[in-house]
Image 1 (tube, helix red, strand yellow):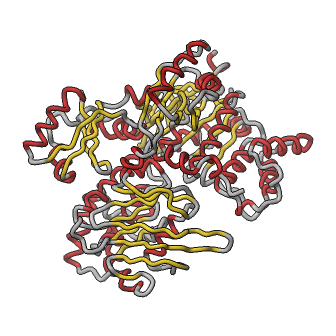
Image 2: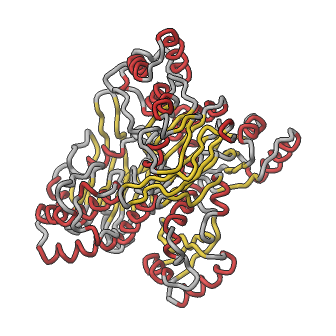
Image 3: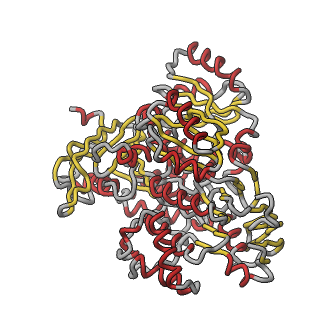
Length: 315
Length: 318
């Protein structure tokens, strides 16, 4: 990857405002060929606006971007031939079959018949949809529709793929199929930029940009991000999560404490030091607990740690 | 009678559509004040079950009671005693906050002598006091979520159904929302959650997983992570990943192999025994191994294992 003359996607200071809101604020990152890069953040973080600017369908107010070497502002047509953009609602024709939808997109992109046959067989196989070729798109489940959208978007061998929340509303099993196709594609040297509001999905990307209110919070590999948080995360489990909370919420060293279904998720300054302290505190109060264990921080922990409690509202 | 303490009781509940068994003799008991999660892939029977529990669809056989009312015989009483809120559930975006509340109060037949008190309560609960005249469409995601919740509980239902209530909401708003839900549960409201979102499932006291019409796993999130995987989970760092996953899919003793970011996730029957074997196997196939460690499965791993692992291990499909 290091011998690549230029990354497949370069965003340099991309900025876009809508009335009353700066949707994307001086955003810079790059995506290399053979890499899956995640734009990760909640609704309203600026993910869709960023993807639209990179797809050449929305000009930025400021900043530059290149996709496959084409300047998306000055030469959006050039960029459009090299990329494939799958918006949140991909335009499938519900009254056409799976095969007919693929053929329609192949014709739009000028893909030859022989190539279309070969490529669509390969993609449908990877998607686990080979047996559904004659089914109407409108009769497919949500996960299948998303996979068919991806097959259509990939039919012309794009070098760069932009996916906007492809797995929203998709069950974990279909989601995993979807990711398997993405991992197969990068072996072909494709660059993939995908957005997600599921923070846990960030862990599947090679690198991620964590966005909040149009700004970049972090950009790195998930492993480096977690290693760099500098805090410990404890899982405290027990039969009465609420009693656990009332005993521990005022303990020293806590930067965040969340009540979960069967315990607490606690971010602390120093895990090895706090575990025995918490155990002693619970025993003294005669609150029963199953275990206090240090666990790996999640991307959500990082997000909350960076944004702080002031980030939840605009007021 | 267990019904006294349980707000949802399901016994051998069954629903057929022609020759297709959508829900196949399921049993559940959900005590008052529990936050209960109901998970399953698309087409597993989840929506059919919820439609029966909400009194919208008659069971083929078996029975279910919700808040003490039988869903087959008293569907209207059931509907009056539940609240329903969904991420996709439409508040009217061009109405004011207060207008949405009044509209839902009307839909739920909240009587006029308690209307003001209930709306005040909902505004306070949702932390929207002073925001009554804002246009709903201009609210941030987390506020809309709380307003939708307020609208769903205006009639004080003892049972609340939530469908992916916080997907797409920022993590801080999501935590605030779930704090509210746990607070309601503390006051005795039973909460029935459906979601594809494992981060939401973590907030449930107990979870049931439905697959092909049957409950295939039931327990607290920790119990499921400990006991429901068909094996143990390994994180394998190696290069090149693409070859490694192909090689490992047919390796002896590997139940499942999948790429996960910069590494692989493997499901094996016994992690300690498998680690040296896998390392040797990969090296024999020319793959450089960076490290192998046993990791705690996430709920998503459990979900995938329970709903697909059976095929991989060649067990009887349910």
